[in-house]
Every structure is written in structure tokens, then in C-alpha cells.
Image 1 (spheres, rainbow, N blue to C red):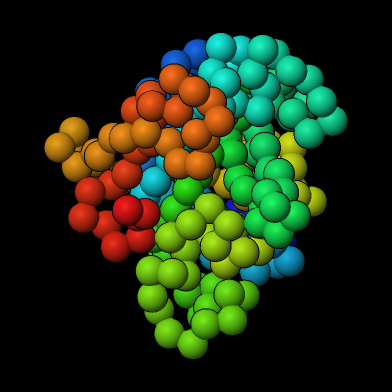
Image 2 (image 1 turned 135 degrees about the vertical axis):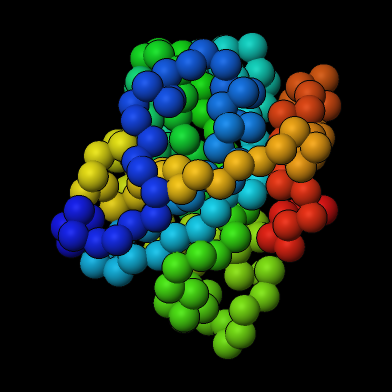
Length: 209
């Protein structure tokens, strides 16, 4: 599919958006941005409403803690602007945005989105009949709805024909609309489990508790 022929929402986020070393700030900046899926020639989109920041090498909740390089984490060490997609519990395909300069291994997990375009296809992929927050209110749910799998790991998110793109349609988030709190499911990380690096769009039906 030629993405340039479609009327996609907003403008592509440029490579420079992803190069900041402040992954926490970028996790906040991604709230409100649009994620576009062009998988199998089918267009879907949603607004990012929940993220979590992960920062190597000191963050014990990060896959690349202590600069650990494995076959799985290799993508995290690329320059910002690529997708880091991994399989969780052998079932869920979780999507992260790699950020920062090459070899920094910072990433933002996108936990939830609000559906925007082609909701019928999202429902079909999720085997649901009607629109409900359960469609996309979790990191494994929304990737299934948008057809995103580990097969797309490592793609550049800022190229016009990429099967996954991040875009800015002008939606703004006020400071008082941004909820902060500890990340989920990282109790093993000790004191790093308590850092307030989870961000949510307040009063949005698709964020987690």
C-alpha cells in the first residue's frame, strides 16, 4: 500500500522527535499522538492514551538493564524512531518506541490507545461485536486490533510507507490532563518499580486503572 495516497491523520513525526535522551519526557509527549497501522494493506489508527518509559542502563525494569544485549534487546540499541516489538507470555505482541541516540537503549511502551479509524476491522481482529474499552485498553489488546506483531520489529516509524507510523494531528494535552504513576508488572525491579514513569490521558475511557 502506498501510504502517500491515503488521507492519513496529521503529519509524520520526524526522526528528530525521537532523538532526545529524556525518555521520560518523550513518554509524556507521545500521549495524544496518533499511531497508524497499514498492515496487510488495511488502514487503522488510534490515539495514544497510555505509555510507560524505560531507561537503560540503570533502570532494572528495562529489558536492556545494565546494557544487556541479547537477540531480543538488540533493537533497543538502535537510534530512536524504530519499533521494538516483543512477545510477552508467548501470546501478546507488545509495541515500544525506541528513543534516544544509538546505543542508549531507551524505549517507551505504548500501553493503550483510543480507536479512531476503521473500528470495524479492529473489532474483527479482536473477535468483538461492539465498541468497548476492552478493544484497545491494554498493550496486547491494541496491537492485536491494529494487526501489529513481532514480524514488524525494527521498522522505522518515520518513513512514509512504513506499516506502522506515528503522527501528529494537532491534538494537545494540557498538563492537568496527564496522570502519572508507577509502571505495571515490574515488581521484580525493586525501587525502580516505584518510579512514576507511567503516563495516562485523564478521563479517557481506554486507559487502565
